[in-house]
Image 1 (spheres, helix red, strand yellow):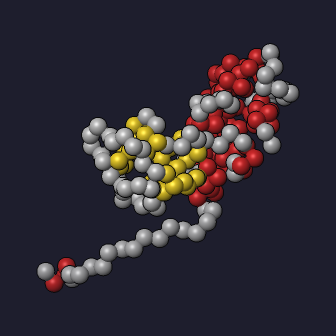
Image 2: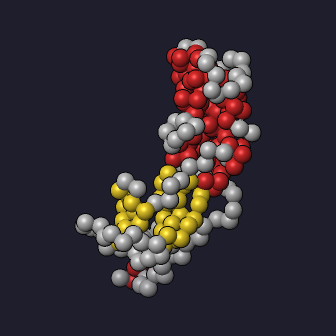
Length: 192
């Protein structure tokens, strides 16, 4: 699978013939390349990746603090990895406070930290089938407007929004469930 396959499935969704190259001079090829966002984080790939904590896009990396100290608010700053779309959490904890400003992560956690983040994954071979199909539907909705008509674009976008929760649910079922300890009740409130 590659980005041509993604483009061709999206074109098929809206009843159009396939292309052979994203660098073609025809309107379909140029729009596919533009909307996929092959060379950056914008476009269909970035939107799909940023919209959910997909398992295939999860990365963990140990990073050391920068030598520079943040101007205010936090004591330590870290440079985000180049492929980081969104920082998820630090040191496997949802309780650690941090902020992202530009390409810097600000926190009070001392170096090094384990950063869990959503990576920009442009190689479709790593995508799960449900995420791939979500990308097909979203790309088809973007292509339908300029290549067919706006009514079809709206219809396909509605299909995308109906399919997306199922795709996220399927992705969320991979692996074991997260468990959380509930605090013990120390007082019987009925006798108070």
